Structures are given as C-alpha cells and as structure tokens.
Image 1 (cartoon, rainbow, N blue to C red):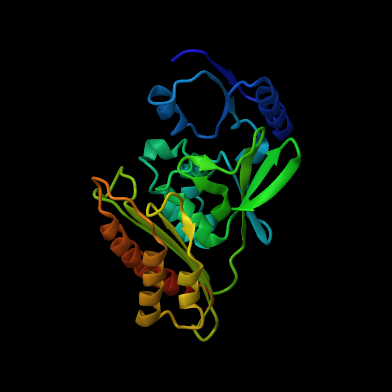
Image 2 (image 1 turned 90 degrees about the vertical axis):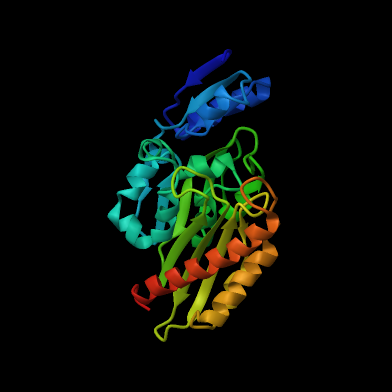
Amino acid sequence: MGGFSYAAPGSVDEVVTLLGEHARAGRRAQVLAGGTDLLVQMRGVDRTPRTIVDIKGVAETGTLRLDGAEIFIGAAIPSAVLNDHAELAALFPGLLESADLIGSTQIQGRASLGGNLCNASPAGDTIPALIATGARTVIAGPAGRRELPVEDFVVGVGRNALAAGEFLVGLKLARPAPGTADAYLRFTPRTEMDIAVAGCGVSVTLDTNGVCTAARIGIGAVAPRALLVPAAGQALVGTRIDDAALAAAGAACSAAASPITDKRGTADYRRTIIAVLCRRAAATARDRARGAGA
C-alpha cells in the first residue's frame, strides 16, 4: 500500500470541512468508523491513495442515548459495546442479534452498525434488522444535517446515499411501543464466521388481544441491496400472526427477492430460504411481543 494519509478530526464540523476540502480538490477521502471492512479492502482490491478520516474521536459518533422517546446510536460505537448493553438488548433484541453475527469477538471490538451500513453489502446482517426497526440515518454534510430511512440509504452493491462531503453520524430509532418486539435470523453454510445466504429482520406490534397492529420486515442477501417488504408486513397486520399469516408473509418475501445464483446457493434456493427465515423470525418476534406488554 502507498499514498495514504490519516486524519482524526475532533468534531462533526471538522469532519465535514475535511471531507469537503478533499472533494473540491478531487482527492479521495474515506471515513473510518470501525475499519473492519475498510482495512481489508485497502489490502486487497482497493489500493488507490486516499486520506483515512477516523471519526472515532468525534463525541457524537460514540454516543449512545436511551433516555427519551428516541434512541440514538453513534456510527462508530463498536458492536461489542452494544451487545453488552442490557437495556438496548431489551428494547431491540433482534437488532443486537444481527450485530452479534458480525465476525468474531475480536472483530466486534471494532465493527460498528454505522460501518456495516455504509459498507452497503447486500449480505450485511445489521441492515435488514435496522430496516425492521424503522431506523433512520443521521447524515452531516456541507448543507447541514439530513435524515434518511435505512431502507433508502443503501442504493446498490457497495453503494450508499452519501453525497460528496457527507458522512454518517449515527442512527435514530423510536422507542418501541408496548407490545413491540423484533427478531433477526440468517442462514449460512457454517454457523460462525460466514456471510448470509439470506437474512430477515422482523418487528411486530401486538395489541392487548394479541392482534398485530404494525409490522415491518427487511430482507438481505437476496437482492442487490437489503429491502423493506411492505407486503410481508401487511400480511401480518390484523392477524394473531398464525400459520396462515406467517405463510403469506414468507411468500411476500420470496416474491420481493431477486437473488443471484453462486457457489453458496441458487436463486431458487435463496427464495425458498428467505420465506422460511421470515416465518421463523416473525414467530419469534410475535412470541417476544406477547411478553413485552401486549
């Protein structure tokens, strides 16, 4: 490797200024949140010179706020920190299930939700789980701040919606209403240290009679980007999430999928698996919601 430089700004404004200067000068800058994808890419297929902009020293990117109606998760908080947070796990067990699947324990000491999202892999485990929770991205740039739903943030394989001079500060999630719970499941050929052949995140809300009043379902690794599947969520609404509703939601996920065939699975296989994962994750979310105030 060669032609690399490193900067560690101390504030959001400093990051935006640095990224803007590089954009105007036609020089490449790349943000480092955890670095677990970036460093591998630098040593492999992407060796072009750039400035590495380390945002871990920016206070807001390392902030976790759970004291109001809205939860904020900084883009650079390591997964290991989130996985050990009992209150966050109680609020979003499915999201933390997805974070706990990223690499080994050592990798999770650096890997972050923000980095996994910005890397924009179709098989990124946390992305369908974030979509299911209705998470919104908080983006800072030369024009100020803006927010974007996670399902609109990833625009293609390895591509996200960040414009020149912008970076991801963190994620906002609404505090779950009573009777709300989420779950995430993926399928891989190996149980550990592998990427998803298919993944599904589900969040449901049940009323006091056990009837589903809201549902969001995100799927990953079965299309060029993770997808929100409104038809799958709608299949659960108005039901007690019984077998018929689960089957309908699974079928909607299969219909929304546009997978590839590769050495890890055929397209037809992935369509079948995503329906199975949807049914199982939705049933788990339902059972959790029954114990969460429904």
